Length: 422
Image 1 (cartoon, rainbow, N blue to C red):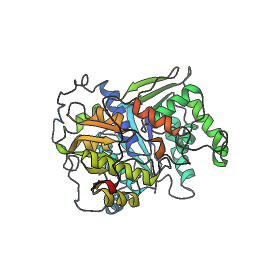
Image 2 (image 1 turned 120 degrees about the vertical axis):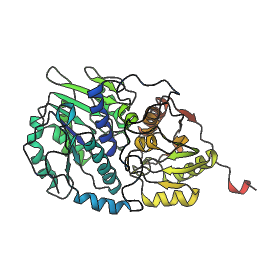
Image 3 (image 1 turned 180 degrees about the vertical axis):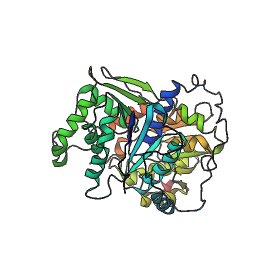
Image 4 (image 1 turned 90 degrees about the vertical axis):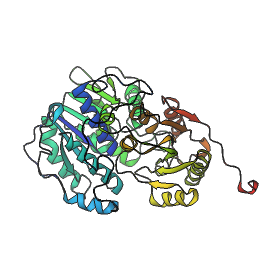
């Protein structure tokens, strides 16, 4: 089901496909209105950050709207709550008429988090248009046709995933003079590096057969991808901005703006801290980078060594894998309804948060500045990588860890064999 086409006029059009992308669009819009730091500079480490001036709605403060209901039930409710018109709230959108277009994925957990994030976006006064862009064979063409008018009229385009073939196709239609790329996690680091080198846009974990040869689908889509890369390259007619919390060096002509998570800090928290340790999950098994059994063993060893009690699952982690983690470790599995930055900020959260190399080792220290939470990261042992992992995987993951600021580095020490633990 897609939103009917209407006479939409948006100075800025944003395309998102994940909850993290939508969060960072909200951060970008906030930054556009208020400037760096929101109302001032970031606090020094150890300085408490004030919460919102007014009490948030109960669900925003951490109380679910209907406690005890399963995610599938929430999803069914929200499917009926479809945005049927161009407006998404009682106020005009800030940031020069921001219209957020959600290109809905199939994954139920991602859809659920996106629904929660659209509620936050509407609370901020933005308009939201939910597109069932993958709803069937004819959905892509229908979606593109309905978005052609707004794409041509928009003065600025904001995107969350420059590697997305859907987004690359939409970029070939736009006439916007200003393009903004917001974070889609650590993939932003690879995007900026590839843009600077003039390379094809290829996700870091995608395995290339042969000597960099293109697969059949990539070969067919190569002209569109090349066109999108050209449009993401600044010239005298077009500006390109990257709004990011990742450590990147700006390619020639690209403006890099720091995402300080000022909106998140102002809208949520500060959190209540527990005495325990929380472990953050990763989808490296699901993307074929890390061997499942090696990952399960590492999680068990880390949880035992550091006394972790909760495991915050990545939205893409499979139910079978999570059941195996729970059975082996006894960890409480938490499937967040919002991106982890917001979950951690509203609390409760452990005084120590453990993670493997991932986006959160860059974002959580920013979202939790001044709260007393320590973020620790454990490197991925090269022996954990699968035979099908991209040749770039080891170097990329090492770079994610090595470039993280304000985190504690952990050395992985395997637990001794059970036979020796008498």
